[in-house]
Image (spheres, rainbow, N blue to C red):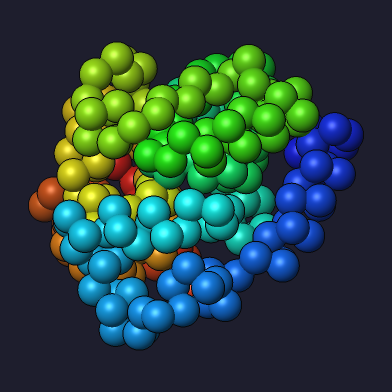
Length: 221
């Protein structure tokens, strides 16, 4: 039995994903006036992405069930005790990662979210899942919130915020990634600069696409 597959977390995740199924960014009135080209441009801009995510502030934008399970498995198998997450949203991916920390015997998860209303939802979900004691949520721009007071060594990094900032967030935490640390980047195809970096062994990474929308990387020694 694991934290992930038993109450209170298992039924909570089931309920959250049922809610997610009714809230699709593709059908949201908030971005109905944007063409697909404009959405892509906003996602790849290092400044204008703020407008896009402000429009989506009421949507969960979670990882998939499969990616959530992958996060749990990677964190468990690696014995992770310290995790950093960029992009909390409603805390669904945070729940998977915190469950792995619980089943690994404890640890610290530092996550950051730009939108205060999403932070409130995430805190509610973490409390409902009985995992809030493992998680520190930082509110604000990740370029500031992750610039200081990080764990001395980081075992796993999840990138699931503004895609254009993936290279900058990686730079903030890179010196603390232990050899063998794992980096999971969701929808990394929207950040070609990031992919070029982690796919270069000269930059200190081993990386491969995983499934349709995840880039899985490892920090080399």
